[in-house]
Length: 100
Image 1 (cartoon, rainbow, N blue to C red):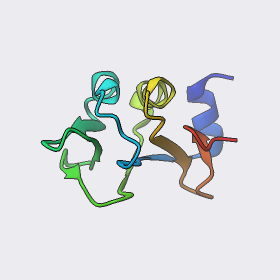
Image 2: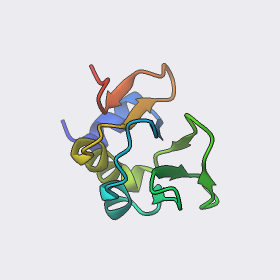
Image 3: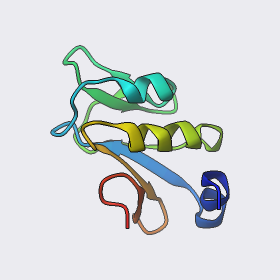
Image 4: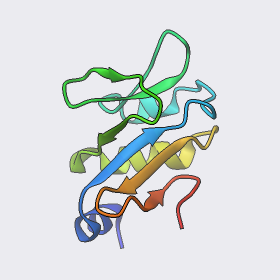
């Protein structure tokens, strides 16, 4: 099953970054600059729908379906293993270090 098919089956997804584990490598911002951005502190953060950097600890943002593959690749390639993608409906992590 593809990433796109899985998302459609499970519903909406959201993503957040654990800045305590972020290495500031920037792979996420390279894969999905519409969703991730490095801040002046050198750490990655998610961006809101209005392109605003969400700097609150544990801030989440929706994963736009057209960018899902890029967000999942970011989680898989992240050297800090700090990117968490979960279903909105039950908050179960589907990609990232705590995925089942």
